[in-house]
Image (cartoon, rainbow, N blue to C red; front, side, top):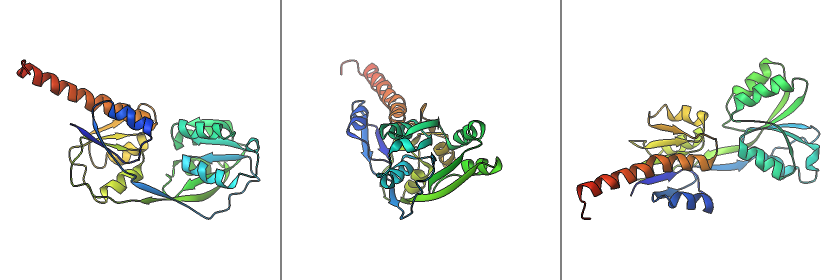
Length: 235
């Protein structure tokens, strides 16, 4: 049986989708989030989120404020849906930080923003905002801790959801001949430092990463089974 390693613990529905394909699954959390004791100013209206963890940090402190007081500019469909679910209006959504910064520069140059980030955030968004004189205040509200774990085996596929997840896995392991399934281009850039066997999700969602792994590995398993049947027609 072909086996895939997920560097994030999947939800029951995600796990069911995967296991129904006939592939084996091993999972663990390659990262751990540490919330920082930072006071987030609530007097502003416009907040930039490039991760769901930044939203969680914001919601921890905004409980006494009505969500309609805030407007969000965010990266990712999941982050956007999470904000809308909590009653916060999402003004702009993009697939990556670069694209979000470009939308802000083009459509909202007169506004002032609070950018809530983690310690592993990339530089594209703040650099583009600075270059175009967009007024913003950045606060680091959480830290991503790498969680090393040794696997004394190889996997047919490995699911990665961030560049930090790749770094964490490689602290104790090697890629070998595994195919890496990445949630987006930013994660793939890190993956390309270590292998050419990379498949990028069509959409930056966990579910689509799973779909890509199933399409690639489960179909290969079926092909191998068919070849075996042709060699042994009586089985």
